[in-house]
Length: 243
View 1: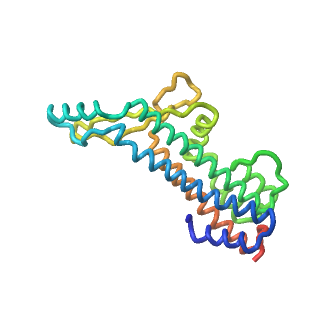
View 2: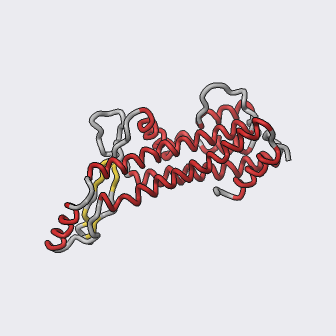
View 3: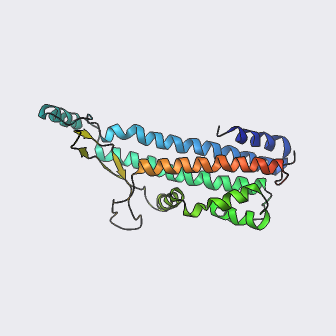
C-alpha cells in the first residue's frame, strides 16, 4: 500500500462510481500500485545479483587472498550472461517506472472526467488537460508547481526508457575501483551509457544504483503526493466522485 489516502481513494472508487467509470478507475488504481511494486522488485533484483558480478572480498591485501579470489572467479557462471541478466532487470525497471507514471495519468483522466481526450495519453499530457478543464483543483496546482519536466529523475527516466522500449536491452558496464587509502573495494558502479543513440555506446554516464534510486523515490513521492491532492479534490467535489 502506498498510503492511507491511496486506500481511501480506492474505497471511494468502489462505493461512488458505477459502470465503466468504476471499472476503469479501479483497474488503473490497482495497476499503479502493482507497477510500483514491480519497479521496487526489479531494483532489488539488480542489487541481489551484484555479488555475481563482483564476488570478491571487500579487502585487497595478500597475494594468497588475490589467488583465492581468482580461483573463485574461475567457477563463476559466464560473466557475459550475468551482465545480460542484470541489464535485463534494469531494462524492466525503466519500462515499469514509465508505465506506472503513464497509468497514473490514465487514472487521473478517469477520476476527473476527462474521457473526451482521444488518442494516446502519457503523463506529460495530463498537466495540459487539467489546465484546460480543472485549473481550480489541488492536483493541478501541485503538478504545476512541480515542474516535473525539469526534474533530473524524470529526464533520466524518459531518456533510458525510450532506449529500452524502442531498441535492444540497455546494456550496462560494471566497474569496480580500489580505494588505496583504505585497501577496500569501492561499491560497484553499473555505468549507464551517456547517449543511448550513439554507437558504439560510451559509458561515461550515471551509475544505475544512484539513478535508479532517485527515479524510484521521485516516482513514489509523486504518486503519493498526487493521491493526497486527489483525495482533497474528491472531498471538495472537484472530481467525478461524489461523497
